[in-house]
Image (cartoon, rainbow, N blue to C red):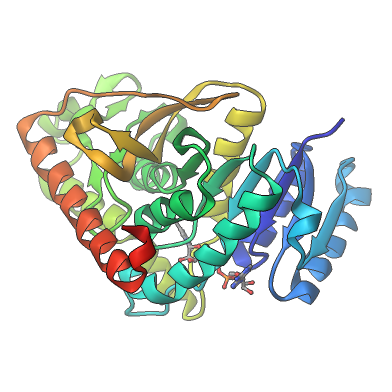
Length: 319
Ligand code: A3D
């Protein structure tokens, strides 16, 4: 039997996810949205591309959680995106309410699913989602690090005029202005980035600009689009996580995962490398951070903690 992926939220990211999942024939897709017409319309439109693309999966649209029953994977994008000038944190009040509804909906219908949250502000929303749904922490995870890492890789590839496939790096911490790109852990064609700096192939100033552009990668796109936020790269990133789970690939991917003492953090979701396989988050990979990395990582954790406290003030049931 084919696997089943339900997409909660059939907006920009939801629609793109559905199309990618169908083209990769990863699973049958149920698009769920409070606006049933959008979910049904996108499902039908994408299904009608199967004659050209040649994929064999079913796509349906719905506004009933019953239709998402027994999903293997659920990817959540329900919520509002940022408008120009807004920070991710400005979305907290609205998206928290939406995520409560979603958490309670999936708790009843898909208690065994692997759940990937994309709704912002990411780390706090995924933490709230785990609490509302009461699903095990290894089965509830947030997408952000893969996207942030891919942005960092893209900017480095363009600067150094080299294939993006040659770049290995990662971005840690919360998905906010204090995220932590890791130049000291970056290799290009297996050589440390440091060598490229000493050979003057990239200046320290340009590297700093790239780090800054990565941190502000989402805002740059929002400004250009004027309406809505990034959706192609976020959808690709979500699909990579779903695929690693469904195919038991055990890839090491930077994701927002529940920390229970790892990296010196307890009871909080934040971006760290994890192994995703058939059991969900199978392992948290602990890197030994240097002093500078630790400083930035802790600053980022502080920001997530602060925002989670704000969430608890909005909904005391999260305490
Ligand atoms: P958008 O195109 O507005 O789609 C959101 C969809 O959610 C809409 O179709 C709404 O009708 C639907 N919705 C609203 N309330 C509910 C509900 N209660 N139940 C089900 N569906 C509902 O937004 P988008 O797809 O561009 O973005 C979705 C979310 O992802 C936003 O919160 C963004 O900020 C976030 N996002 C996160 C990243 C990360 O890297 C973490 C990147 C880009 C966007």
